Image (cartoon, rainbow, N blue to C red; front, side, top):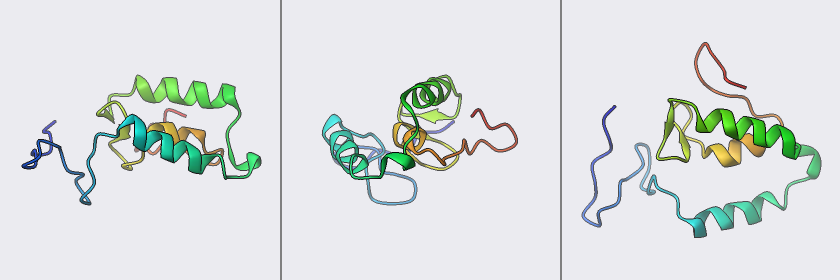
Length: 94
């Protein structure tokens, strides 16, 4: 699999936008803050979240340790949403 070309700043751009594909701890903290504003019924239970995240971490389609190759989502975020589904074509992992 080829990697995205690096920009002049040394960062790798997202394939579909101008954002960096590598997410910092600060960026993740902001996302988790937003997640806290969602109704509890929209979030997966801790056990389900942990199970999904473990499957994503073992997936060959995980890129940069954070991003799903198939949908471009941050797996930590996607796995936390109760109604989310694994987007792997023909062989969803969860």
